[in-house]
Image (tube, rainbow, N blue to C red; front, side):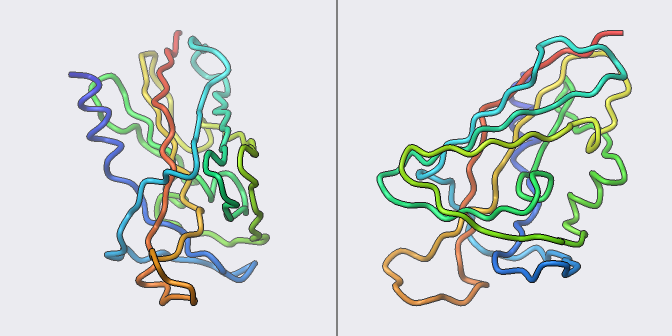
Length: 185
């Protein structure tokens, strides 16, 4: 039952950041009806340093994004906090309260000072780390469940060779494995 609550909680994810955004531009994402496509080209693996952490210490999520396709994949790259959506729930499946930064990230209200893209060759990996405790208020001991989503995979509609209207471009996302960790007093 706990897993069902966790999966329900991670099903509702924030909107994607639009590719091609001008560096330094303040961005407010609007929720739209673009299709979300689970990536078959990219694999996302997530892990925390320890399965048991002491309350009040930093909790860091390590992420490994790998091109598992046979072709080049272009991915966005600004800052891990902007490129990944995180969902952290307690044992009952309830999402934890976010910090001020977490709320800002969830609403996609921030200034991007540097935005870039890079190509990943087949089999190539890129690593990132995000401090969970900067995004979520982890104030109680307990067992927690986390999932990350990489939302900066650039994709075109199947069969299209020319640029498409951004409002019709699918949002391709790579979903991580679920992570479980325990916070102790």
